[in-house]
Image (cartoon, rainbow, N blue to C red; front, side):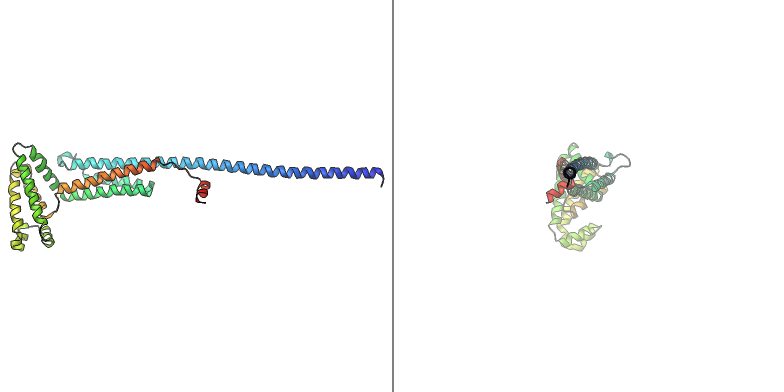
Length: 291
């Protein structure tokens, strides 16, 4: 082999090795570039996802806050309406009533149902149930609630009637005690009878304590009827209420109103706690937490 040929072969071999080395280095660099690009993409994706989750949570919180605020406003309005209702019919503008307030409250509840979450909805339902119970009780015994209030409060303000008001209330409570001390079957008979006198005749001598307590309470209420503080039909309703119900109508409603106020306080506390939490989550962080 001539020296020229040998030199040419050596030169070509060097070129080949140089090309192979360059290609290998290029492959290594390309793999590094791809890894860096992939890492950059994943970091950008995570950042975008986190930002989106935070924005979405903020929007959800704003929607929930609006729903809670609207519901709470209606709940407080219902309480104000109840306070007006227990005063008497004259406190109500034309065309309004407690049932209307309940309807608005239930409409606001539907928004809380959409926004959730379940614990807050449970608190909201507690308010709604208390309001429905109060409305039902008041609707059933509203005239008695108003009559009780006038005997207890307005009677106290009329000159010379404060002592009589106390005696009338005591006589009605004495009638209620007599009723509760009788057998359940007798109380059911009284409650189911429209004519108490007829029920007493059927009970015979067993009705004597009832009859005496009823007569005494009737005498104590008569001055209030005479002065127009209560109407004749309201006087009869008060007497019957004391004869067949374990609680005065206004006291029963007052207790339900107390339950409603406590339910509102529970709702406010739960809503504040929920809205105060800020935990934006991404699919990656959730998966990592679960792992």
